[in-house]
Length: 260
Image (cartoon, rainbow, N blue to C red; front, side):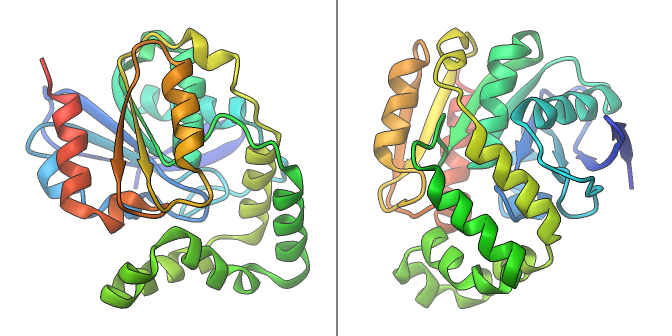
């Protein structure tokens, strides 16, 4: 179980796949672990060596006192890459994972080959949503918000069609330490990547869900229009598009990353 110390926090990571293949690093949403990408792994491993990790405050990583910042979280990712002996990686981050990817693409461009920013945003104008959510978790725990979270994360059609998958993600969410969720939520609330994304030079694909109420298509279009040369792919999904769209999502990721 590899662990690297990053700014005093143990970060759990896993590396799968053959040495010599190009590297793809996955980065998770708030309230999930590296296992949110399990559905992508069989197909992706045919083409890439894969690095996954649990963000601080999540999974098997440490939960130091918050608040955290996007720079802190970006440096955690760099520490994982260093520990895995990876000089340069492709990146696929969903939601908060996309926010960390924006920081890396702007602040550590020499470490990023191609960049996928999925179901994410550079900025949240409405801070009150995050303040209210954080206050609820502080007072009542994650159980108080799991129902609403799953309704935002998956369309009603998917929740009815794949209840076991939704249940598994709900369990993953509830296993998150509240302190870790809050500290990461503060990083999301306080983030403003609107200027730095203009400096990203890596080839970039934006992924958005047509029914994603949290990180909207409008937010995705802002990213596409701000990052030089970025393209965009839309899925008929809510927030956790890699699970809701499964194989189609994996195909889109591989299509972009393997394109000559």
